[in-house]
Length: 494
Ligand code: MN
Image 1 (tube, protein in one colour):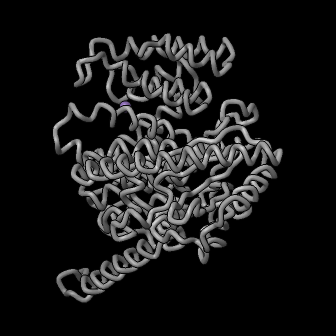
Image 2 (cartoon, rainbow, N blue to C red):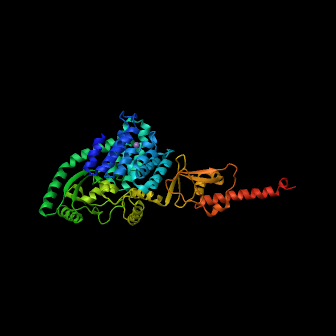
């Protein structure tokens, strides 16, 4: 891929010339920064940020996001600093690049801890959701070139994708991206299962092709006859990994999976969806309990469609998914659908409001939601929303309540760090010990070795019970020591 391909895509997406010129400038800046560096594939390094940016453009993102995709590895991997990026391209792009750089700094310390750190950071950086989306596009390209890496690295990247990145794409309603992330990772994590699923699903597809063609034809005739408008009908086979997960839940019984191949009917608007559903049920009897109205009651990730499973002739069962063009775009692209067309979204979507809405939807859906696994995954992420996540200078993530102070942070690292704390720096600037920390802050505690006990005042400042208890313990210790010293005749004044 070349820069010209990206430019062509931007022109197709009707970007203003000014924005296209910016992207060009950014490209040459990044190319120069990475000059002489090669990827393991042997290509010039710039191919990777270029692929990332191209993906972001395909996903309908704005120029700042695409530019940041081009620059995402610059501060970390080259001599060119973040300040230089800021000077050249301004603070919006620099802030995005900084966010991605921070995400990359999270250290790998065992799977559990790593996953938790990532989950937290994802939510923390979600104050500008675009950071996460750049990371997802970055990951797609990394997966596509994963074959050149050592098996250990392949495993780690692929697993991490299945456990973190794909669920996040799902949460953001980006069905297309989620499927792509999963299917690129699947063969590395479960090679045998992947081969098997691929084989059985293609066999099944061949078997079903006739039925599908027949059903499609009958339905078209019916819709035309009844004057019901639709845009097109397509068949889609389930993504491999999502099929595999479903098989695990259904005792590996392929015959219990009705949506292995589904017919999708895309309409112009919502009323037409219900008309099509009526026509479908007029033709074939629906299976009990399989009519789902995700338009009236969208899934927690906002997925909307009508689903029904029908008997087309005796034993032939087929699932149909009916949705409008808009719903289809949203199901594929989720949060990024039409992003750059929306002129009023200047820098970011108010993710917090969206999260709040999500939680409400989640609660509403809790009782009805069939897919427990999916629900729990979504919920796990929401739990983190009232917490902040801050960094140690070494890149570890500390998870604190929303109003925590540097003293809370110090005691969360170690009692001694708390007891000896004399001041704090946030993002390399000195701040008062009473200040409130914010997600994404890098916090450094200044200590004095000779200081042995905390300030009693701190009890009124700290927000966490952990810090409170540790301060009390230390005060007790020093006070009793003080008393002991006083009682010891050796220390008596003569
Ligand atoms: Mn990268």
